[in-house]
Amino acid sequence: MKKEGEIKLKNLGIILGLFIIACAPTSQVDDDKALTGKELEERNNECKLYNSFAAGNMQNRDYKSTVENYTYMLDIGCDKCQCLGYDGEDAEYIYSYFGRAYIELGKLDSASYIFKKGLKYLKDDEVLLENAQWVAGKLKNLDEQIYYLDQWLALDESNLKVLNEFARVYKENKMFEEQIDILDMILTIDPGNKSANGEKKFAFRTLGKDELDVDKERWNSDQSNIQYGKEYAKRLLNKGRNEEVVEVCNTLLIYDKYDTQILKYLGDAHLNLYNEDFALAAYESISNIDKTDYINAIEIAKLYIDKEEYQIALKWAEKAVQFSGSKGIALNQRAEVYFSAAESCSSESLTFSDKLVFEIAWEDYVAAAHSGYIRARARVDFLQENNITTSGDWFMTSEKGNEVTPQGECYSWIKRSIKRKE
Image (cartoon, rainbow, N blue to C red; front, side, top):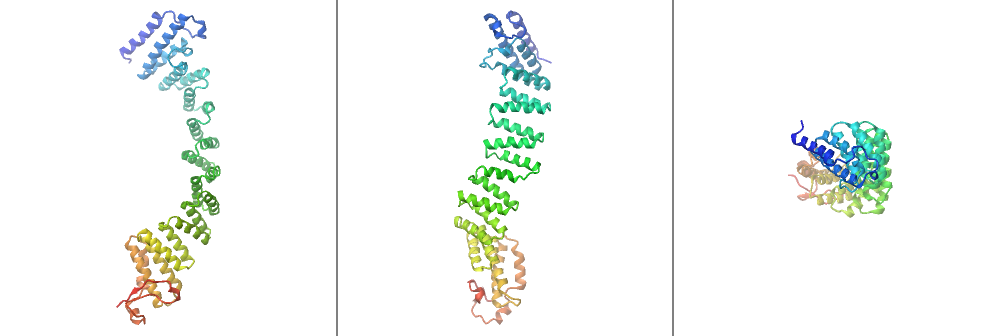
């Protein structure tokens, strides 16, 4: 029920409208020029009064009374006067809030009618266009919603608010080709828009297209954009398209030859293509830029192990140990150098020097395991049981001294020694 004060306020407006301003017209006025100066003044005063009533009703969520007051205002031509203090935007104000009151009452058809009526007078009004398209969407009238969005966008094709709404509507209605066109407009205005880029990939994926084409298009539009290029290269690498990674990275290096991430992608792609020398060149370039990157040093050591260049591999493994602060992963890699060298140099019957090299590797595996690199534990157990020196080996050897370094051409680069076992 309405509060007594509100009823009195409404009644007061009616009394004022009918008696105090007795000369005001009560039918819709087609042309202000048909009114005398006194009649215009009286009509404008009445419009101000009912506008105040309607605003109060809206604020108090009395939407039924809001509708009644706005209906009366339209009947007496308030939408055609510049009398409410809004610089001639009275019609926008009336139709916008009139329609919103109907929305609050759940009468979407009536709201749609009001917005359409308002757009006859104010076809370029953004508020009315926004409200009209929203109601059309709620009424499942897609063609009408798209029409209003198109009219809204025509006012300013760079309006991201409209473009995002357009994209949302197309997506919800599974119109992905159309959505892609709108997303392209957004990305032209805002190339760094991650949301639009992600939505475009989703649309591509839904249509059965290669979403990598989205990254390709974005990068090709500005190949000097390092970030776009790196994102494209990363996704190409994840897809195993290594030749394309090499091409993209080589282009990017023209613009920034010191970007270690680009060099890493380039090295990884070459490695996947079994171009070990090119991979090494890329990784070593990273080391020249960032000497403290111990993970990169580990990768280089692995490659030199594969090439059976153990002395160079050891140099890089030592760098990894130094710059990592003796982390387990680096100690394990140094152990791998010695282990691989011993496997390569030894025959079926292990010599004393072979066992010394395996024992040097064993010491590093033990240190790696103690530093938290659990995977080293398997090597520790295997070598301890099979490949390191025993007291008997030391008893039988002709080598003298408390510590012995591996001998022979194959191990000439090794400077570490093993303490004698009694």
